Image (tube, rainbow, N blue to C red; front, side, top):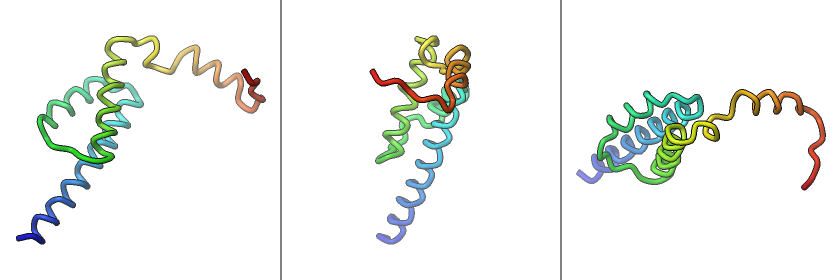
Length: 93
């Protein structure tokens, strides 16, 4: 019985890691609807460790995407500006 419980915990840890990494990727590319569905599917699932921390960060990012789009998405003028300065030395503050 103890061995079975250990195996189940390892399987849950792998599943938690996988969903948290998927959600992090979806957040990075701005897939709000997919993230919302992921959170619905997670429901009250008990997630621990690094996966829980990652999902918490994703939740914060989703909130930013929905409530402050101007700062949540690093695209457009910011992306063009970054391209202009590739390979150039950065001036200190």
